[in-house]
Amino acid sequence: MSHPLFTPEARLLLERDDVPAMEAFCETLHPATVAESLAGDFSVEDVWRFLNTSSIAIQAAIFVYFPLEWQVQLVEGTGRPHMARLIEQMSHDDRADLLRRLEPQVVESLLRLVDEADRRDIATLVEYPENSAGALMTTDYAWLPANISVEQALDRLRLQAPDSETIYYIYIVDDQRRLLGVLTLRELILAPRKALVNELMDTQPITVRVTDDREKVAQDITRYDLLAIPVLDGDDRLVGIVTYDDVMDVVVSEATEDVHRMGAVAPLEESYLETSFVKLWWKRAFWLSGLFLAELLTFSALASFEDAIAAVVVLSLFVPLCISTGGNSGSQAATLITRAMALGQVSGKDWLRVLRHEILMGLVLGITLGLIGFGRASLTPASVRSSAPQRPEPFQVRVPKNQPLKIEEKEEGWWRWKKTIRIVHIPKGLKQSMVDEHDTKVALPDDAEYKKAPDPVDAAFEIVQLPAKCKVFHPPVDRYSLSLVIALAVATICLWGTLVGSMLPLIFQRLGVDPGIASNPFVATFVDVTGIVIYFSIAKYLLGPYLG
Image: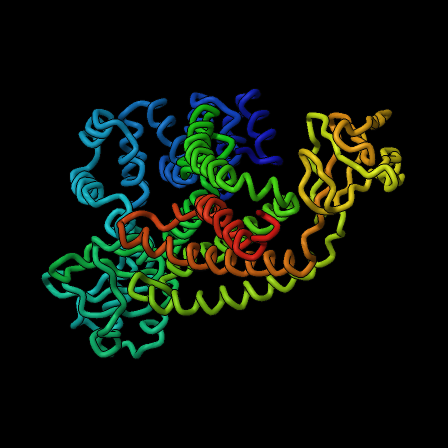
Protein backbone atom coordinates (compact mmCIF):
# COMPACT_ATOMS: atom_id res chain seq x y z
CA MET A 1 0.00 0.00 0.00
CA SER A 2 1.43 3.37 -0.98
CA HIS A 3 0.15 6.74 -2.14
CA PRO A 4 1.13 7.57 -5.74
CA LEU A 5 1.52 11.29 -5.01
CA PHE A 6 2.64 11.65 -1.40
CA THR A 7 4.82 8.55 -0.90
CA PRO A 8 7.61 9.94 -3.16
CA GLU A 9 7.39 13.26 -1.33
CA ALA A 10 7.63 11.56 2.07
CA ARG A 11 10.68 9.61 0.88
CA LEU A 12 12.32 12.84 -0.29
CA LEU A 13 11.67 14.53 3.07
CA LEU A 14 13.26 11.60 4.89
CA GLU A 15 16.33 11.70 2.65
CA ARG A 16 16.71 15.43 3.34
CA ASP A 17 15.88 14.97 7.04
CA ASP A 18 13.61 18.01 6.71
CA VAL A 19 11.97 17.98 10.16
CA PRO A 20 9.74 21.09 9.72
CA ALA A 21 8.44 19.78 6.38
CA MET A 22 7.73 16.34 7.88
CA GLU A 23 5.86 17.99 10.75
CA ALA A 24 3.79 20.04 8.30
CA PHE A 25 3.16 16.89 6.25
CA CYS A 26 1.69 15.11 9.30
CA GLU A 27 -0.35 18.07 10.50
CA THR A 28 -1.70 19.24 7.14
CA LEU A 29 -2.80 16.04 5.43
CA HIS A 30 -5.58 13.78 6.63
CA PRO A 31 -4.24 11.07 9.00
CA ALA A 32 -5.43 8.33 6.62
CA THR A 33 -3.45 9.89 3.76
CA VAL A 34 -0.33 10.13 5.91
CA ALA A 35 -0.65 6.46 6.95
CA GLU A 36 -1.17 5.38 3.34
CA SER A 37 1.89 7.37 2.27
CA LEU A 38 4.16 5.79 4.90
CA ALA A 39 2.95 2.16 4.98
CA GLY A 40 4.58 -0.47 2.83
CA ASP A 41 7.52 1.34 1.26
CA PHE A 42 9.34 2.42 4.42
CA SER A 43 11.07 0.63 7.26
CA VAL A 44 9.59 0.79 10.76
CA GLU A 45 12.48 3.02 11.85
CA ASP A 46 11.82 5.49 9.03
CA VAL A 47 8.09 5.62 9.83
CA TRP A 48 8.78 6.46 13.47
CA ARG A 49 11.40 9.03 12.46
CA PHE A 50 8.74 10.68 10.34
CA LEU A 51 5.93 10.47 12.93
CA ASN A 52 8.06 11.70 15.83
CA THR A 53 8.25 15.12 14.21
CA SER A 54 4.59 15.68 15.23
CA SER A 55 2.75 15.74 18.54
CA ILE A 56 1.67 12.55 20.29
CA ALA A 57 -2.01 13.32 19.57
CA ILE A 58 -1.35 13.58 15.83
CA GLN A 59 0.76 10.41 15.96
CA ALA A 60 -2.18 8.57 17.55
CA ALA A 61 -4.58 9.89 14.91
CA ILE A 62 -2.27 8.67 12.12
CA PHE A 63 -1.38 5.39 13.83
CA VAL A 64 -4.96 4.01 13.82
CA TYR A 65 -5.11 4.22 10.00
CA PHE A 66 -2.20 1.83 9.51
CA PRO A 67 -3.24 -1.79 8.84
CA LEU A 68 -3.27 -3.83 12.04
CA GLU A 69 -0.28 -5.93 10.98
CA TRP A 70 1.67 -2.70 10.46
CA GLN A 71 0.54 -1.40 13.84
CA VAL A 72 1.98 -4.51 15.47
CA GLN A 73 5.31 -3.93 13.71
CA LEU A 74 5.33 -0.29 14.78
CA VAL A 75 4.70 -1.27 18.40
CA GLU A 76 7.69 -3.60 18.28
CA GLY A 77 9.82 -0.86 16.69
CA THR A 78 9.51 1.82 19.37
CA GLY A 79 10.06 2.18 23.08
CA ARG A 80 7.42 1.04 25.53
CA PRO A 81 7.01 4.46 27.28
CA HIS A 82 6.41 6.20 23.95
CA MET A 83 3.92 3.54 22.86
CA ALA A 84 2.08 3.74 26.19
CA ARG A 85 1.60 7.50 25.71
CA LEU A 86 0.32 6.91 22.19
CA ILE A 87 -2.15 4.24 23.38
CA GLU A 88 -3.58 6.71 25.89
CA GLN A 89 -4.38 9.04 22.97
CA MET A 90 -6.06 6.37 20.81
CA SER A 91 -9.81 5.78 20.81
CA HIS A 92 -10.86 3.04 23.19
CA ASP A 93 -12.02 0.53 20.57
CA ASP A 94 -8.97 1.02 18.34
CA ARG A 95 -6.48 0.41 21.12
CA ALA A 96 -8.40 -2.66 22.29
CA ASP A 97 -8.19 -4.10 18.74
CA LEU A 98 -4.45 -3.43 18.69
CA LEU A 99 -3.72 -5.00 22.07
CA ARG A 100 -5.63 -8.18 21.13
CA ARG A 101 -3.06 -8.79 18.39
CA LEU A 102 0.05 -8.21 20.51
CA GLU A 103 1.93 -10.84 22.46
CA PRO A 104 0.71 -11.11 26.08
CA GLN A 105 4.10 -10.08 27.49
CA VAL A 106 4.11 -6.97 25.27
CA VAL A 107 0.60 -6.04 26.39
CA GLU A 108 1.54 -6.49 30.03
CA SER A 109 4.62 -4.29 29.71
CA LEU A 110 2.59 -1.56 27.96
CA LEU A 111 -0.30 -1.59 30.45
CA ARG A 112 2.10 -1.01 33.34
CA LEU A 113 2.94 2.37 31.78
CA VAL A 114 -0.63 3.40 30.94
CA ASP A 115 -2.76 5.64 33.16
CA GLU A 116 -4.85 3.75 35.73
CA ALA A 117 -8.23 4.76 34.26
CA ASP A 118 -7.15 3.82 30.74
CA ARG A 119 -5.74 0.54 32.01
CA ARG A 120 -9.08 -0.45 33.57
CA ASP A 121 -10.94 0.56 30.42
CA ILE A 122 -8.59 -1.47 28.20
CA ALA A 123 -8.83 -4.50 30.47
CA THR A 124 -12.63 -4.36 30.28
CA LEU A 125 -12.81 -4.09 26.48
CA VAL A 126 -10.20 -6.76 25.82
CA GLU A 127 -12.18 -9.32 27.85
CA TYR A 128 -15.14 -9.28 25.43
CA PRO A 129 -15.22 -11.87 22.60
CA GLU A 130 -13.55 -10.49 19.48
CA ASN A 131 -16.65 -10.48 17.26
CA SER A 132 -19.06 -9.13 19.88
CA ALA A 133 -20.55 -5.69 20.37
CA GLY A 134 -18.40 -5.30 23.48
CA ALA A 135 -15.21 -5.70 21.47
CA LEU A 136 -16.46 -3.23 18.87
CA MET A 137 -17.68 -0.49 21.19
CA THR A 138 -15.97 2.58 22.59
CA THR A 139 -16.52 4.00 26.07
CA ASP A 140 -15.99 7.54 24.80
CA TYR A 141 -19.58 8.78 24.68
CA ALA A 142 -21.53 11.83 25.84
CA TRP A 143 -23.96 11.32 28.72
CA LEU A 144 -26.19 13.44 30.93
CA PRO A 145 -28.47 12.99 33.94
CA ALA A 146 -32.19 13.31 33.29
CA ASN A 147 -33.13 16.06 35.72
CA ILE A 148 -31.06 18.99 34.40
CA SER A 149 -32.07 21.81 32.08
CA VAL A 150 -31.02 22.29 28.47
CA GLU A 151 -28.75 25.17 29.52
CA GLN A 152 -26.95 22.99 32.07
CA ALA A 153 -26.76 20.12 29.56
CA LEU A 154 -24.98 22.30 26.99
CA ASP A 155 -22.46 23.45 29.58
CA ARG A 156 -21.69 19.83 30.50
CA LEU A 157 -21.38 18.80 26.86
CA ARG A 158 -18.75 21.47 26.25
CA LEU A 159 -16.63 19.77 28.90
CA GLN A 160 -17.25 16.24 27.59
CA ALA A 161 -16.86 16.97 23.88
CA PRO A 162 -13.02 16.86 23.69
CA ASP A 163 -12.96 13.30 25.11
CA SER A 164 -16.04 11.91 23.32
CA GLU A 165 -15.87 10.08 20.01
CA THR A 166 -19.22 11.58 18.99
CA ILE A 167 -21.61 13.98 20.68
CA TYR A 168 -24.42 13.86 18.14
CA TYR A 169 -26.23 11.38 20.39
CA ILE A 170 -26.39 12.18 24.11
CA TYR A 171 -27.31 9.29 26.37
CA ILE A 172 -29.40 9.93 29.46
CA VAL A 173 -28.55 7.69 32.43
CA ASP A 174 -29.49 7.40 36.09
CA ASP A 175 -27.17 7.10 39.08
CA GLN A 176 -26.61 3.39 38.32
CA ARG A 177 -25.79 4.25 34.68
CA ARG A 178 -28.95 2.54 33.49
CA LEU A 179 -30.01 3.94 30.15
CA LEU A 180 -33.15 6.07 30.44
CA GLY A 181 -33.24 7.57 26.97
CA VAL A 182 -31.35 9.25 24.16
CA LEU A 183 -31.28 12.80 22.86
CA THR A 184 -29.76 14.22 19.70
CA LEU A 185 -27.59 17.31 19.72
CA ARG A 186 -29.97 18.94 17.22
CA GLU A 187 -32.92 18.44 19.56
CA LEU A 188 -30.92 19.83 22.45
CA ILE A 189 -29.82 22.97 20.60
CA LEU A 190 -33.31 23.74 19.32
CA ALA A 191 -35.01 23.18 22.69
CA PRO A 192 -35.87 26.03 25.12
CA ARG A 193 -32.98 26.72 27.47
CA LYS A 194 -35.10 26.09 30.60
CA ALA A 195 -36.63 22.81 29.37
CA LEU A 196 -35.64 19.64 31.20
CA VAL A 197 -33.70 16.89 29.48
CA ASN A 198 -36.17 14.18 30.58
CA GLU A 199 -38.93 16.05 28.73
CA LEU A 200 -37.01 15.93 25.44
CA MET A 201 -35.40 12.50 25.40
CA ASP A 202 -36.58 9.43 23.49
CA THR A 203 -37.38 6.88 26.17
CA GLN A 204 -37.34 3.85 23.83
CA PRO A 205 -33.93 3.93 22.15
CA ILE A 206 -32.62 1.12 19.94
CA THR A 207 -29.97 -0.82 21.87
CA VAL A 208 -27.80 -3.93 21.61
CA ARG A 209 -26.37 -6.21 24.26
CA VAL A 210 -22.68 -6.36 24.97
CA THR A 211 -22.59 -10.03 23.92
CA ASP A 212 -24.47 -9.54 20.63
CA ASP A 213 -22.64 -10.54 17.45
CA ARG A 214 -21.14 -7.66 15.50
CA GLU A 215 -23.24 -8.58 12.47
CA LYS A 216 -26.40 -7.90 14.49
CA VAL A 217 -24.98 -4.52 15.52
CA ALA A 218 -24.30 -3.66 11.89
CA GLN A 219 -27.79 -4.77 10.86
CA ASP A 220 -29.48 -2.65 13.57
CA ILE A 221 -27.49 0.48 12.77
CA THR A 222 -28.24 0.05 9.07
CA ARG A 223 -31.92 -0.79 9.59
CA TYR A 224 -32.62 2.22 11.82
CA ASP A 225 -30.23 4.66 10.06
CA LEU A 226 -28.28 5.41 13.24
CA LEU A 227 -24.92 7.12 13.61
CA ALA A 228 -24.26 5.20 16.83
CA ILE A 229 -26.00 2.59 18.94
CA PRO A 230 -25.79 2.18 22.74
CA VAL A 231 -24.45 -1.08 24.20
CA LEU A 232 -25.96 -2.43 27.43
CA ASP A 233 -24.78 -5.09 29.84
CA GLY A 234 -26.95 -7.70 31.52
CA ASP A 235 -28.25 -5.16 34.07
CA ASP A 236 -29.27 -2.63 31.38
CA ARG A 237 -26.36 -0.37 32.29
CA LEU A 238 -24.81 1.66 29.48
CA VAL A 239 -21.26 0.43 28.97
CA GLY A 240 -20.41 1.93 25.58
CA ILE A 241 -21.51 2.80 22.07
CA VAL A 242 -20.74 1.46 18.61
CA THR A 243 -20.31 4.18 16.01
CA TYR A 244 -21.19 4.09 12.32
CA ASP A 245 -17.56 4.16 11.14
CA ASP A 246 -16.79 1.02 13.14
CA VAL A 247 -19.86 -0.67 11.68
CA MET A 248 -18.64 0.16 8.18
CA ASP A 249 -15.43 -1.71 8.98
CA VAL A 250 -17.54 -4.67 10.12
CA VAL A 251 -19.65 -4.61 6.96
CA VAL A 252 -16.55 -4.57 4.74
CA SER A 253 -14.88 -7.30 6.79
CA GLU A 254 -17.93 -9.58 6.82
CA ALA A 255 -18.65 -9.04 3.12
CA THR A 256 -15.01 -9.77 2.27
CA GLU A 257 -15.07 -12.94 4.37
CA ASP A 258 -18.29 -14.11 2.70
CA VAL A 259 -16.89 -13.44 -0.77
CA HIS A 260 -13.70 -15.35 0.07
CA ARG A 261 -15.64 -18.33 1.38
CA MET A 262 -18.01 -18.33 -1.59
CA GLY A 263 -14.96 -18.38 -3.83
CA ALA A 264 -13.56 -21.39 -1.93
CA VAL A 265 -10.76 -19.40 -0.29
CA ALA A 266 -10.11 -19.28 3.44
CA PRO A 267 -10.55 -15.63 4.59
CA LEU A 268 -7.39 -13.51 4.52
CA GLU A 269 -6.37 -11.58 7.62
CA GLU A 270 -4.18 -9.17 5.63
CA SER A 271 -4.67 -7.55 2.25
CA TYR A 272 -4.01 -9.65 -0.86
CA LEU A 273 -0.58 -8.17 -1.68
CA GLU A 274 0.56 -8.19 1.96
CA THR A 275 -0.32 -11.86 2.52
CA SER A 276 2.72 -14.10 2.25
CA PHE A 277 2.94 -16.44 -0.73
CA VAL A 278 2.99 -19.56 1.44
CA LYS A 279 -0.03 -18.48 3.49
CA LEU A 280 -1.99 -17.57 0.35
CA TRP A 281 -1.00 -20.87 -1.26
CA TRP A 282 -2.23 -22.81 1.76
CA LYS A 283 -5.54 -20.97 2.02
CA ARG A 284 -6.25 -21.61 -1.65
CA ALA A 285 -4.75 -25.09 -1.96
CA PHE A 286 -6.63 -26.43 1.08
CA TRP A 287 -10.04 -25.76 -0.46
CA LEU A 288 -9.01 -26.58 -4.02
CA SER A 289 -7.62 -29.93 -2.90
CA GLY A 290 -10.86 -30.78 -1.12
CA LEU A 291 -12.94 -29.79 -4.12
CA PHE A 292 -10.59 -31.69 -6.43
CA LEU A 293 -10.97 -34.86 -4.39
CA ALA A 294 -14.73 -34.41 -4.45
CA GLU A 295 -14.67 -33.91 -8.22
CA LEU A 296 -12.94 -37.28 -8.56
CA LEU A 297 -16.35 -38.76 -7.87
CA THR A 298 -17.39 -37.54 -11.33
CA PHE A 299 -14.87 -40.03 -12.70
CA SER A 300 -16.57 -42.85 -10.83
CA ALA A 301 -19.99 -41.63 -11.95
CA LEU A 302 -18.94 -41.49 -15.61
CA ALA A 303 -17.22 -44.87 -15.38
CA SER A 304 -20.46 -46.49 -14.24
CA PHE A 305 -22.11 -45.34 -17.48
CA GLU A 306 -19.22 -46.35 -19.75
CA ASP A 307 -21.37 -48.73 -21.81
CA ALA A 308 -24.02 -46.09 -22.45
CA ILE A 309 -21.38 -43.60 -23.62
CA ALA A 310 -19.81 -46.20 -25.92
CA ALA A 311 -23.18 -47.10 -27.45
CA VAL A 312 -24.42 -43.50 -27.92
CA VAL A 313 -21.35 -41.29 -28.12
CA VAL A 314 -23.41 -38.15 -28.70
CA LEU A 315 -24.51 -38.30 -25.05
CA SER A 316 -20.98 -37.41 -23.97
CA LEU A 317 -21.14 -34.16 -25.96
CA PHE A 318 -23.99 -32.86 -23.80
CA VAL A 319 -22.41 -33.76 -20.44
CA PRO A 320 -20.76 -30.32 -19.93
CA LEU A 321 -24.02 -28.58 -20.85
CA CYS A 322 -26.11 -30.56 -18.38
CA ILE A 323 -23.79 -30.51 -15.36
CA SER A 324 -22.86 -26.84 -15.81
CA THR A 325 -26.59 -26.05 -15.70
CA GLY A 326 -26.81 -27.63 -12.26
CA GLY A 327 -23.66 -25.89 -11.02
CA ASN A 328 -24.82 -22.50 -12.29
CA SER A 329 -28.34 -22.77 -10.89
CA GLY A 330 -27.01 -24.07 -7.56
CA SER A 331 -24.40 -21.32 -7.27
CA GLN A 332 -27.02 -18.72 -8.12
CA ALA A 333 -29.39 -19.99 -5.42
CA ALA A 334 -26.58 -20.31 -2.84
CA THR A 335 -25.48 -16.73 -3.48
CA LEU A 336 -29.02 -15.36 -3.09
CA ILE A 337 -29.75 -17.30 0.11
CA THR A 338 -26.36 -16.65 1.72
CA ARG A 339 -26.64 -12.92 1.09
CA ALA A 340 -30.25 -12.85 2.32
CA MET A 341 -29.12 -14.59 5.52
CA ALA A 342 -26.28 -12.08 5.97
CA LEU A 343 -28.78 -9.22 5.68
CA GLY A 344 -31.19 -10.84 8.13
CA GLN A 345 -33.85 -11.36 5.46
CA VAL A 346 -33.85 -15.16 5.80
CA SER A 347 -33.22 -17.39 8.82
CA GLY A 348 -33.34 -21.10 9.57
CA LYS A 349 -37.01 -20.96 10.55
CA ASP A 350 -37.87 -19.83 7.01
CA TRP A 351 -36.59 -23.05 5.42
CA LEU A 352 -40.03 -24.28 4.38
CA ARG A 353 -40.90 -21.00 2.65
CA VAL A 354 -37.54 -21.01 0.92
CA LEU A 355 -38.03 -24.63 -0.14
CA ARG A 356 -41.47 -23.95 -1.64
CA HIS A 357 -40.20 -20.83 -3.36
CA GLU A 358 -37.16 -22.56 -4.85
CA ILE A 359 -39.12 -25.63 -5.99
CA LEU A 360 -41.36 -23.37 -8.04
CA MET A 361 -38.42 -21.28 -9.22
CA GLY A 362 -36.39 -24.38 -10.08
CA LEU A 363 -39.28 -25.80 -12.12
CA VAL A 364 -39.75 -22.58 -14.09
CA LEU A 365 -36.01 -22.15 -14.65
CA GLY A 366 -35.69 -25.83 -15.57
CA ILE A 367 -38.49 -25.60 -18.14
CA THR A 368 -36.93 -22.45 -19.60
CA LEU A 369 -33.49 -24.00 -19.96
CA GLY A 370 -34.96 -27.35 -20.99
CA LEU A 371 -36.74 -25.75 -23.94
CA ILE A 372 -33.49 -24.13 -25.02
CA GLY A 373 -31.69 -27.46 -24.66
CA PHE A 374 -34.44 -29.23 -26.65
CA GLY A 375 -34.05 -26.75 -29.47
CA ARG A 376 -30.28 -27.09 -29.55
CA ALA A 377 -30.31 -30.88 -29.38
CA SER A 378 -32.86 -31.08 -32.20
CA LEU A 379 -30.39 -29.29 -34.46
CA THR A 380 -27.75 -31.98 -33.94
CA PRO A 381 -26.94 -33.46 -37.38
CA ALA A 382 -27.28 -37.17 -38.04
CA SER A 383 -23.53 -37.55 -38.45
CA VAL A 384 -23.07 -36.40 -34.85
CA ARG A 385 -26.02 -38.38 -33.48
CA SER A 386 -24.50 -41.57 -34.89
CA SER A 387 -21.37 -43.07 -33.43
CA ALA A 388 -18.35 -44.21 -35.43
CA PRO A 389 -16.02 -46.18 -33.16
CA GLN A 390 -12.81 -47.47 -34.71
CA ARG A 391 -12.38 -51.24 -34.81
CA PRO A 392 -8.78 -52.12 -33.87
CA GLU A 393 -8.89 -55.55 -35.55
CA PRO A 394 -9.91 -56.70 -39.05
CA PHE A 395 -13.32 -58.33 -39.63
CA GLN A 396 -15.13 -60.04 -42.48
CA VAL A 397 -18.51 -60.10 -44.24
CA ARG A 398 -20.09 -62.93 -46.27
CA VAL A 399 -21.53 -61.34 -49.44
CA PRO A 400 -23.47 -62.86 -52.42
CA LYS A 401 -21.39 -62.60 -55.58
CA ASN A 402 -24.30 -61.08 -57.49
CA GLN A 403 -24.75 -58.32 -54.83
CA PRO A 404 -21.34 -56.77 -54.32
CA LEU A 405 -20.83 -54.23 -51.55
CA LYS A 406 -21.43 -50.62 -52.53
CA ILE A 407 -18.65 -48.07 -51.99
CA GLU A 408 -19.14 -44.30 -51.90
CA GLU A 409 -16.70 -41.44 -51.42
CA LYS A 410 -17.50 -38.68 -48.94
CA GLU A 411 -15.68 -35.60 -47.70
CA GLU A 412 -14.94 -35.42 -44.00
CA GLY A 413 -13.49 -32.60 -41.93
CA TRP A 414 -13.30 -28.87 -42.52
CA TRP A 415 -11.09 -26.44 -44.45
CA ARG A 416 -7.43 -27.56 -44.32
CA TRP A 417 -8.34 -30.78 -42.52
CA LYS A 418 -10.91 -31.80 -45.12
CA LYS A 419 -10.27 -35.21 -46.70
CA THR A 420 -12.09 -37.80 -48.79
CA ILE A 421 -13.02 -41.09 -47.17
CA ARG A 422 -14.44 -44.27 -48.73
CA ILE A 423 -17.48 -45.82 -47.10
CA VAL A 424 -18.54 -49.44 -47.58
CA HIS A 425 -22.30 -50.13 -47.24
CA ILE A 426 -23.08 -53.50 -45.59
CA PRO A 427 -26.79 -54.37 -45.99
CA LYS A 428 -28.79 -55.83 -43.16
CA GLY A 429 -28.96 -59.62 -43.01
CA LEU A 430 -25.44 -60.46 -44.20
CA LYS A 431 -23.44 -62.82 -42.06
CA GLN A 432 -20.62 -60.80 -40.52
CA SER A 433 -18.33 -60.53 -37.53
CA MET A 434 -17.68 -57.55 -35.24
CA VAL A 435 -20.67 -55.68 -36.66
CA ASP A 436 -24.28 -55.45 -35.45
CA GLU A 437 -27.08 -57.00 -37.44
CA HIS A 438 -28.38 -53.88 -39.20
CA ASP A 439 -27.56 -51.72 -42.18
CA THR A 440 -24.06 -50.53 -41.51
CA LYS A 441 -21.60 -48.09 -43.03
CA VAL A 442 -17.89 -48.78 -42.67
CA ALA A 443 -15.23 -46.16 -43.46
CA LEU A 444 -11.97 -47.65 -44.73
CA PRO A 445 -8.67 -46.37 -43.34
CA ASP A 446 -6.58 -44.10 -45.55
CA ASP A 447 -4.83 -45.98 -48.42
CA ALA A 448 -6.38 -49.30 -47.36
CA GLU A 449 -8.42 -51.74 -49.44
CA TYR A 450 -10.63 -54.63 -48.55
CA LYS A 451 -9.88 -58.12 -49.89
CA LYS A 452 -12.19 -60.72 -51.45
CA ALA A 453 -11.90 -64.47 -51.21
CA PRO A 454 -14.20 -67.32 -52.33
CA ASP A 455 -16.51 -68.76 -49.71
CA PRO A 456 -15.25 -72.31 -49.07
CA VAL A 457 -18.75 -73.42 -48.09
CA ASP A 458 -20.93 -71.91 -50.88
CA ALA A 459 -19.54 -70.86 -54.28
CA ALA A 460 -22.38 -68.32 -54.69
CA PHE A 461 -20.86 -66.23 -51.90
CA GLU A 462 -17.56 -64.58 -51.26
CA ILE A 463 -15.82 -63.43 -48.10
CA VAL A 464 -14.92 -59.73 -47.92
CA GLN A 465 -12.05 -59.11 -45.52
CA LEU A 466 -12.05 -55.52 -44.15
CA PRO A 467 -8.80 -54.16 -42.66
CA ALA A 468 -8.12 -53.10 -39.09
CA LYS A 469 -8.89 -49.55 -37.91
CA CYS A 470 -12.11 -49.22 -39.88
CA LYS A 471 -14.72 -46.80 -38.55
CA VAL A 472 -18.08 -48.49 -38.10
CA PHE A 473 -21.00 -46.05 -38.23
CA HIS A 474 -23.99 -46.96 -36.09
CA PRO A 475 -27.48 -45.67 -37.01
CA PRO A 476 -28.11 -42.17 -35.60
CA VAL A 477 -30.16 -41.68 -32.45
CA ASP A 478 -33.63 -40.36 -33.16
CA ARG A 479 -33.49 -36.57 -33.24
CA TYR A 480 -36.46 -35.98 -30.95
CA SER A 481 -35.62 -38.78 -28.55
CA LEU A 482 -32.22 -37.19 -27.99
CA SER A 483 -33.80 -33.73 -27.65
CA LEU A 484 -36.26 -35.05 -25.06
CA VAL A 485 -33.42 -36.60 -23.03
CA ILE A 486 -31.48 -33.34 -23.02
CA ALA A 487 -34.56 -31.25 -22.16
CA LEU A 488 -35.62 -33.47 -19.25
CA ALA A 489 -32.05 -33.81 -17.94
CA VAL A 490 -31.44 -30.05 -18.05
CA ALA A 491 -34.78 -29.31 -16.35
CA THR A 492 -34.26 -31.94 -13.63
CA ILE A 493 -30.65 -30.99 -12.94
CA CYS A 494 -31.58 -27.28 -12.83
CA LEU A 495 -34.29 -28.02 -10.26
CA TRP A 496 -31.91 -30.21 -8.25
CA GLY A 497 -29.12 -27.60 -8.32
CA THR A 498 -31.53 -24.87 -7.22
CA LEU A 499 -32.74 -26.93 -4.26
CA VAL A 500 -29.23 -27.91 -3.20
CA GLY A 501 -27.94 -24.34 -3.50
CA SER A 502 -30.81 -22.90 -1.47
CA MET A 503 -30.91 -25.53 1.27
CA LEU A 504 -27.21 -26.05 1.99
CA PRO A 505 -26.62 -22.59 3.56
CA LEU A 506 -29.63 -23.11 5.84
CA ILE A 507 -28.45 -26.60 6.80
CA PHE A 508 -24.94 -25.31 7.53
CA GLN A 509 -26.32 -22.55 9.73
CA ARG A 510 -28.42 -25.10 11.60
CA LEU A 511 -25.27 -27.16 12.21
CA GLY A 512 -23.44 -24.09 13.51
CA VAL A 513 -21.22 -23.81 10.43
CA ASP A 514 -20.66 -20.57 8.52
CA PRO A 515 -23.19 -20.59 5.63
CA GLY A 516 -20.53 -19.01 3.43
CA ILE A 517 -18.84 -22.42 3.29
CA ALA A 518 -21.79 -23.52 1.10
CA SER A 519 -19.81 -21.75 -1.57
CA ASN A 520 -20.36 -21.71 -5.29
CA PRO A 521 -17.55 -24.22 -5.95
CA PHE A 522 -18.84 -26.50 -3.19
CA VAL A 523 -22.38 -26.50 -4.57
CA ALA A 524 -21.13 -26.87 -8.15
CA THR A 525 -18.96 -29.85 -7.23
CA PHE A 526 -21.79 -31.62 -5.41
CA VAL A 527 -24.28 -30.99 -8.22
CA ASP A 528 -21.76 -32.04 -10.90
CA VAL A 529 -21.50 -35.54 -9.47
CA THR A 530 -25.21 -36.01 -8.86
CA GLY A 531 -26.05 -34.33 -12.19
CA ILE A 532 -24.14 -36.99 -14.12
CA VAL A 533 -26.17 -39.71 -12.44
CA ILE A 534 -29.44 -37.90 -13.21
CA TYR A 535 -28.47 -37.28 -16.84
CA PHE A 536 -27.45 -40.83 -17.72
CA SER A 537 -30.33 -42.36 -15.75
CA ILE A 538 -32.79 -40.41 -17.90
CA ALA A 539 -30.83 -41.35 -21.04
CA LYS A 540 -30.88 -45.07 -20.19
CA TYR A 541 -34.62 -44.94 -19.60
CA LEU A 542 -35.54 -43.09 -22.81
CA LEU A 543 -32.85 -44.42 -25.14
CA GLY A 544 -32.98 -48.04 -24.08
CA PRO A 545 -33.19 -49.48 -27.64
CA TYR A 546 -30.04 -47.61 -28.66
CA LEU A 547 -28.12 -48.65 -25.56
CA GLY A 548 -28.83 -52.36 -25.98
